[in-house]
Image 1: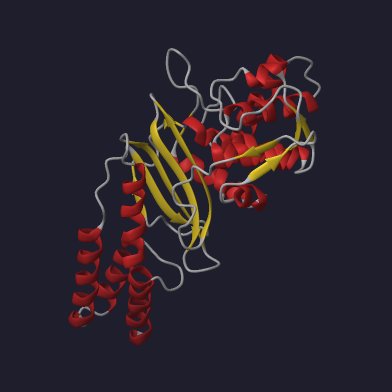
Image 2: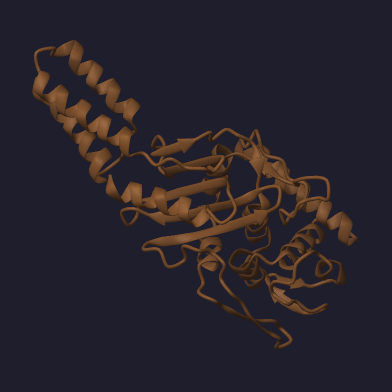
Amino acid sequence: MKFEIVGSIFALLLSVFFGAGDAPVPNQVFSNVNHANNEYPQNQKAKNLVWDKIAHYNKSMPSLQSQSAFLSCLCDNPPLFEKTPSMQLPLASVTKIMTAYLALRELGPDYPVRVSEEAIATEGIAGDLQIGEVLSVKDIIVMMMASSSNDAAAALAEALGRAYHALTFSDAIAQTVWLMNEEARLLGMQHTMFQNPTGLDFEHGPSNFSTAYDMILLLQATRSQPLLWDLSRMPDPRVVSQYGITHALLNRNPFRDFPHYVGGKTGTTDYAGENLVMLFEKPLGRLHALILLGAPPGQREAEAQKLLDWVNDL
């Protein structure tokens, strides 16, 4: 029994510091150390090694300027890193993850989306959509997730709302926003609120809000739609509408070339600052999520890289 307790402590350390198996956070190590203290107070050498490793772990944790940050394996493990993960903050274009997820699930990837004049009037020109052209849901999602096209998000939201029998553009958008909030409720995203499908700010303030904790719940749900993330990481894709109009796109995701990158979405507005959601595998087959909300202007990529370097050093 003594050797099992000591072995358990070392297994936990290997898991935390060298990436093997299910990586616990320090609190779990504390619990095991305390158990060892109570059972075997004479085993001071093993306990000292554990505490040395914990001290190294805490000292090496990066300091971030983002208002909220979260890094975790999507496998029911405790987080590897968190900073104010329950703080409710503006989402900006990270909103488009929910919009795309619902449309892909409800309509399917090949459902035709007709681009309306009202959708084109949405702020932003990414995607260069034309009034009346028809694209598939998956092609619209490429525009949304890779190039962050607001017109594409509005067109997709309109298509989804009309599939629920909305008759006008405004009614279709309202229907889709209701679906987004209802899905958030069903997923247990208690601190999330959507007011539009794009994440664009209103004139008087932000539109959509969530927390890093809530976003993890959404990311778990999107695992049922892996195509969503496949489309987000396409390198500078070209999309062709049913009428032969070609759209050459720029993938704006800064970590699309990161090893074992699965997908991601950025978001930037005046009120939100810079946001990032990123999925990657470490090691292969173990899906991890990195979330940054409210990074200072121009610091999103550097902040995310700090966390990625840190987790690779564990």
